[in-house]
Amino acid sequence: MSILGRQFRHRASTAAASTVLVTGALLGGGLTMAPPAFADEPAAEQEVARFEVDFMKDMIDHHALGVMMAQTCLEKAIHEELTDLCQTIIDSQSTQIETMQGWLQDWYGRDHEPQLSSYDRLSARNLEHWSGDEYEIQFMRSMTSHHKGAVTDSDRCLDRAEHPELLGLCRTIHESNSKQIDMMQGWLQQWYGLRSGYSGY
Image (cartoon, rainbow, N blue to C red; front, top):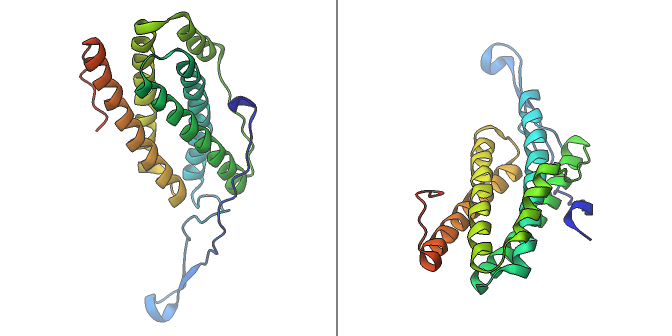
């Protein structure tokens, strides 16, 4: 089954949330502190909750396109190192899609299947028109650009998300995509003498 048709409910572990009550004996009046987000609960602030929902939906779609692109690589790449990287992308991003689908359901009661525009689908299919060295060059350039978007979005997530689980995932996305960008930049230089000034760090 393709990633676009897959939905896996990844159940986050349940944690109890409690409200901290600061009594009048301490502050001269009652004050109820808003609890942080825990598994199976939405973010405490509406704006943060809206961000988390939008981020996960967008990253699910973004990852689905990355998986589609990487699937062409398994058949067309020449270098084993690149084939191995593409399999890693497929495995890790498929798992992350399933994880975010589970969180959307657990925290916000939302279902989301990957949505790709006709332009996204065309971009992935265009890679199939290349072969040999030219395919690898086009693929690595395209995937580098694609990964840059994920790095930028994950940075925004680290600034604005609340759930620790989501923050951890965004940190993983930032680190793994940055390292993979640098790998592809190195291969473009080593194999094809092509340079790029971008570094994910």
